[in-house]
Amino acid sequence: MTQDLDSRAVAFFVRRHRLRPVELVPWVLAVGAFFVFPDYLALGAQVLATILFGLSVDLVLGYAGIVTLGHAAFFGMGAYTAGYLAAHGMGAPVLGLIAAMAMAALVGCLSGLVILRAQGLSILMLTLVVCVMLQEAANKLTSITGGADGLQGMEVSPVLGLFHFDLYGKTAYCYALVVLFFGWAVARTLVHSPFGRSLTGIRENVARMHAIGTPVFFRLVTIYTISAAMAGAAGALIAETTQLVALNALSIDLSGLILVMVIFGGVGRLYGAFVGVPLYMIAQDRFSEIDPTYWYFWIGLLLVLVVMFARGGILGLCAALIRRFEQRRRR
Amino acid sequence: MDTAFSAAISIAFHGTAFAMVLYLVSVGLSVTMGLMGFVNLAHGVFAVAGGYFMTTLMMQGGVSFYAAVPLAMIAVAALAVPLERFLYRPLYGADELDQVLMTMGLVFMSVAIGKYFWGPTAEPFYPPAALSGQFDFGTRSFPAYRSFLIGAGAVLVTLLWLGLERTRFGAQIRAAVDNRRMAQSVGINTSGLFMLAFALGSALAALGGALGAEILAIDPGYALEHLVYFLIVVAVGGLGTIRGPFVAAMLLGISDTAFKYLLPEFGAFFIYALTMAVLLWKPRGLFGHA
Image (cartoon, rainbow over all chains, first blue to last red; front, side):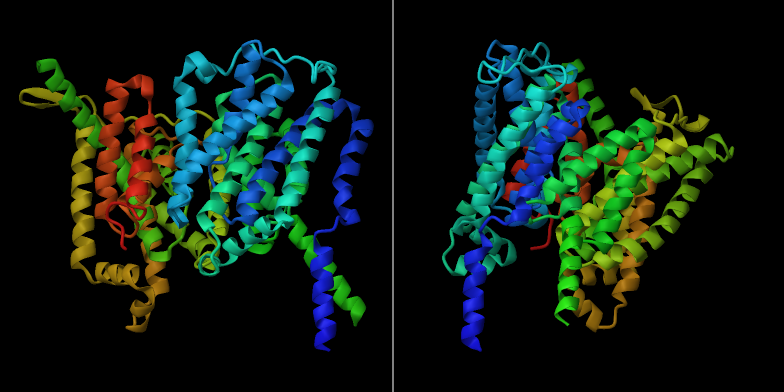
């Protein structure tokens, strides 16, 4: 009996990190959408970039358990870096992307070294303060950022010198999809690695992780930096595909909204952003044509309902349904 | 020399008036967060609701300013009680993230509700005739309404302090902040206490929002725009005290006014840097409980 249990546990651990077929669904859908909705590719590119942003939030929030209200700091940092380079004659998108990731990672690492020592409410406050501080800096450094008018005069050159950004967003969509795929591969590898498992351990029980000798602070700073780089890449993608960077890229509104999108999908599951972000953004695109005033009301209401009744988000609900179905079948 | 002096006076005056508004709005937040350990981002909603009720009563109901303010406070307290009972209470002791999200949902809803009923622009606010114009204090004169704001703030600070230090209710709150389980076991009805403290804190926020309508304009985005300042007051001051937020509000109000007056090119940057420094030095705030 115990042997059976042991071998089942072993089998579970061996199987856990293998790629399941269902994990390919988002990619099939994303490629399919390219052919089915050729008129919506510009929106699609933004959705893909925002998914990457959501994925970066899921890494720190869902896996490491850091409640952050300031992740737009890194997104905006990336967006402004890519935008600044493009406005100063260095419009190669991949170069901008790499520079954006580097800058965002730098800010993430430095701020992480400072704020991740705190706990609870003060960590929340500190993430918030870092974000508003950067926004205020961007607002005042008008010579670099354009201030409240936004960054002017971005000229983005073709991707790798080959693919021009077109009016329909075909190039933007493919470019964003490739970058998102890389981001997903990195994130998936990370969370299934021993490093990723230790993050989950820190989320669940910090004291115990300290006791078994995990360098908790170092691990947190590492994931915070990686996540910041990923958020920076998302910011760069949006900046390059829309050729526009404004102050709201650094706002706490955005920090809150991305949190909301990931929560709707389901946090700590790696795919929460893949579900929550498209649903949110497509719904917003549809509804704001009808009436943008009410949009915030319904989002707020939905958020309250999700917290009260469906804490796992959409993916959490699906998992609960599948579990119930399987139990019934076993009976 | 004289210009520097009058600039300093002016900064101190306007900074203090701003600080009073910040304090009134935030003190309830500090007490309720200290009592329940609840991360409440939606406290500004009560302030803006107070402001909206007051201006509507004054503009459409023809109610005088002196009657509209207490009526707005009562209305907001009445609104706060069911919210506490049905939305906040289920989340006491829950995950911080859940509390953040639920209250953020309330903030989003308030933005839409404000826009729907009162339109996207700021509500006009006209102080009563007795409080408009300038007050003459012998050598120099000050805007009357802001002088009133400082005076009213000072009276309320004293009342709150006396209430918390000298009354039975205040003693119960202090006991529950220090050790909730112990307070419960000596027979204090903590859930009743929470509800009362929450209603009172919301009424104070409504008062701050209403009186401060001249400084922090009442518009739909209020609860979101000023969230950072309210949270700074609470986090820097320390949770569960009424002295901490006062010191923090004074610091924030005066330094914010000073920086905006003397170094406008830096905006609020220094304020945020200062907040960060304080939070790193004392993670529980200046007067927080260890």
